[in-house]
Image 1 (cartoon, helix red, strand yellow):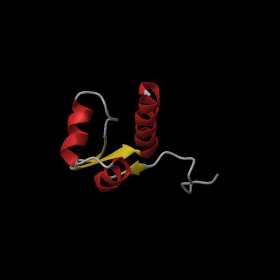
Image 2 (image 1 turned 90 degrees about the horizontal axis):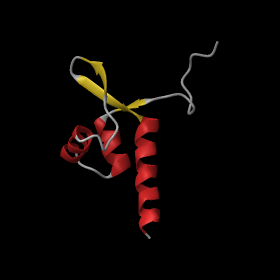
Image 3 (image 1 turned 30 degrees about the horizontal axis):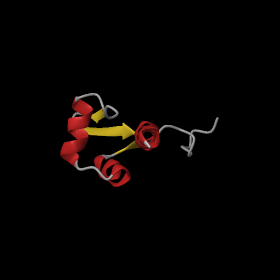
Image 4 (image 1 turned 180 degrees about the vertical axis):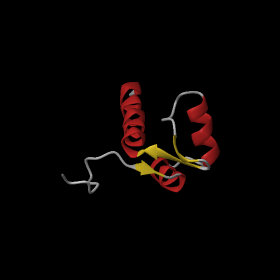
Length: 71
């Protein structure tokens, strides 16, 4: 059984990568998350969280689709 991660498996990403992918700042990410308009973070340890990369990518695509619907 192959236990090595690959591009098809879920991957947790930390805040700097979430910020880079979305162009959002830390406060905006947590604000959107608080109102249910951004993927929820996953607790990695007592003081560490991450986000599921696929969920963040899906959120980005949903914003693009929303833009297309407005036009």
